[in-house]
Image 1 (cartoon, one colour):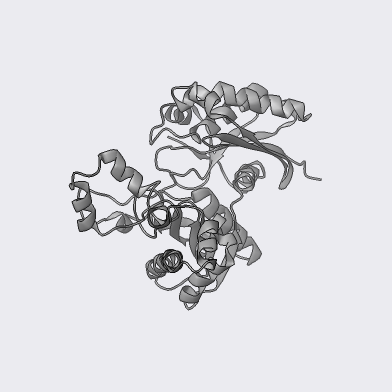
Image 2 (image 1 turned 135 degrees about the vertical axis):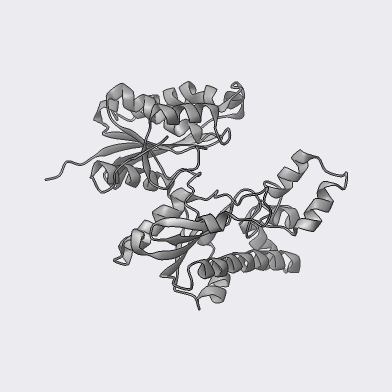
Length: 358
């Protein structure tokens, strides 16, 4: 009988750290460790928080009778690393250095790999990160923007995209590496990507103004009008960045980023709220259509995932526009702990070779 593997998963966010302990695919223990603003504000840089967060994790495991020595591997959320291919990466010194300095940005997820490596080294087991947000598998043709000074970049909810793709493949008796899929992650940010033979070959950047607008992000904008706003004298550089990410999208039109609140507004007869809600679905459908062209119409499935995929009215609006392309599958929510654990498990079982970060 095969030995079962016990895996600790660490997913740090800005004000909390989610942890989970898995026995193979089965979740044994899960907890969200919340950190107050007062606690976090003591630290100048995100990296400075690592000992504080690590100690809370270790103490929580101890309190719940989970000995560190019982663990077979540690998996951390991959942070803002250099652009990489998708997959599971063994955490090495080059990665730790890039996470410490935040080579592509200072973000709480950078702590996932640092804490995982430290605990793994302490107890003598391997440590990994899985499908970090900087996964970049775009084809060269997809990087061309139309202006020589600007290159299209891949910023995508890679962890959830890849996890849902693998789940779909398993349910449909296919290999992810042999499928053509279009996946739309629908959350605070929206990323729609074309997956071909296990790689995200083109994607609408979820962070920096590309593709559909989302609850708090502007998506792609008419460039000439954007330039006028920039030089109108009304807005600073910082203001413009916030308008693209944080104060764009639904919040710009309706003053809320909560889609549930928008639904309540629609129920009370608010026609503007209905128009904006419908427009977001319309834009997601347009992005899916563009990805179908990238895949030359050869699409095995269209997968809708993320928190907003819980809203069946919203997914129905998308489906009615894109079902002519391929069958639509809905996977509500995002289970990042599961996705991280499965990445580590594939390596432990020898189903996937860990990649080397350089």
